[in-house]
Structure formats: C-alpha cells, structure tokens
Length: 207
Image (cartoon, rainbow, N blue to C red; front, side, top):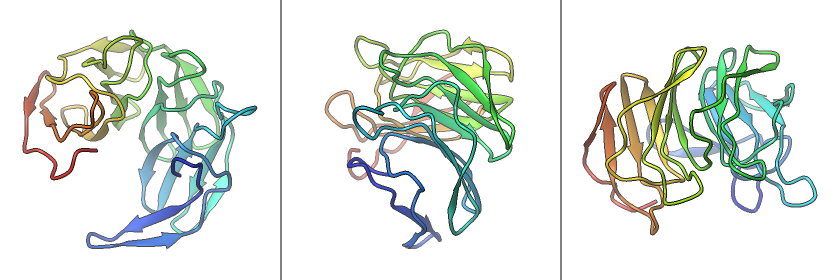
C-alpha cells in the first residue's frame, strides 16, 4: 500500500525490490505482519465515506486474498506476529484507539486494550510477546512503550525521542525503532533490550 491510496506490493531479496501482485483493496496507512511468503495486511485508509478500513488480506508469496475483517476498522495502527498468529493494536477510528485484536489464521478476536490509546505507533514481536512503540496520543508525539504477554499490556521504558510514523522491528527483548516524525522527520535510531532504549546509529535519510 501507499499514500494515494495504492495496492502496490514489492518483495526484497536482500539487494533489490521486485513488483508482485497488488493488494485486493488499494489503501494507505495499513499494518502488516508475517513473512515474505506468508504475509498479513490489515486496516488502512481509502478516504470518505469508507475511511477506516477493517479489511484483512493474506499474502502467499505471489498474490493477496481477502480474509476475515478486523472487529474495529482503523488506520495508522500497529501490527506484528505471523499470518496464523497476528496482533493488531492502536490506530485511528476516528479518534485514537487502544483496541487490540489477535488473528488465528482465520478470524480476529478482541483482547485487552493498550493502556494508552494512540495512533501512528510501531509494533514488534509475536502475538504472545509483542511491543507497541511510540505514536501520537493526542498531544506531543509519544515516547511510550508497552509490552503484551498474550493477555494484557504493561508499560515499559520510554523511547529517548517521542515520535509517530515510526519504523520498527525485532522481538520483545531485542527491538529497533527507526525514524518517524517528531516533527520534522528524524534519522534517530534506538535499540530496546527488553527494559530500556539506547541510541543506535542514525539512518542516512530521515523518514
């Protein structure tokens, strides 16, 4: 997906990107989970009147197919986990939400909300050991970090630099947060060791 919206999908082989089958529904601000051959895309934005999408799609390495919908339609949400054990949290509904849902490969089920509702956050980890990082909680860009244990969320150490639209990856005990908007866009990179964040080497270009 892309701001536009777009259905474009590309795969990376460690060196370059190649185009593959488009999303069934073009959109922007969706979340993702899974691997290159078993991906999951959910939520997003297409503009009025159907602004906050609840759509979910599965990727098999070449094409996308529709799956069962989220219970709460939203955009700028976070995702992590796998195609058969995914996790969606936060987003904009309109209004910030802390809604959390788990995907079992077939359908989504509602779980306990984030402690702080927010949008533009990042996700990392797996369904039973997830992270919700940064975002926008209605005021200045949030530095918040929350850990998920498969049932509920617990607050953890804050980012050194609060931001939204953040790039994230890794697992609950070893994660990375890259770029984002403070504003403006930042090159800041931070690493999480399971308790606190430390500064890493900056991105070449702020994003």
